[in-house]
Length: 256
Image 1 (spheres, rainbow, N blue to C red):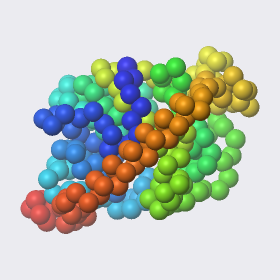
Image 2 (tube, helix red, strand yellow):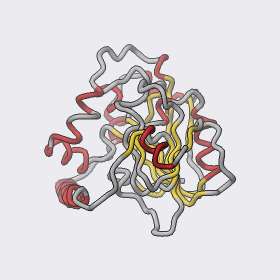
Image 3 (cartoon, helix red, strand yellow):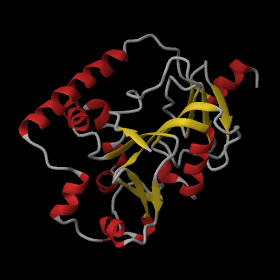
């Protein structure tokens, strides 16, 4: 069940004593995670840099579709920009719901995939009616060039105006889905209602389904709230943190 639409993985309802695992942490692990799981340690095909780990974290090399944890072993699970890469999203999501009580799932949105497609993405994903709806990318028209470096790895870190756009409408290019107990999802929908979002030109009604109508006061409120969060997030960067380690440095530190 969806519970919120956070601004980012730094805006999550994680309690101080929660035990947290992150799956697919790659080159940008969440500092709050106690345990991180990464499948690919010898290839950067699915990420934009080498695996990184904070010294306080436990690193596990495992497949997110078959997690080596007990049922509900964690209070919270984070999955940031990983679901769109997996082979079996049904199994992947079920594993998340099995090992954790609550969590956060972030993926590119349908529009985000058009703006910054990546060859390693296997699924196009939309949040519709509180569900994550996944459609196989190979069944859709060719996306052409790959602009992931610009829209995923440059502008979000360098452009203040782009950040404000993201904060004022956080679902524009990204699906941000915080959940509790389970995740409501559909893979390769056959129902024409859901399928049409991936296979047909969007009508006005379809656009308003994903981006509901608003008014000046609501939009202004979203803008102010987004800017407020952005300032808070930027200030957090000055919080002293341990240095990120490469996988080799981590193994040397832990004597592995």
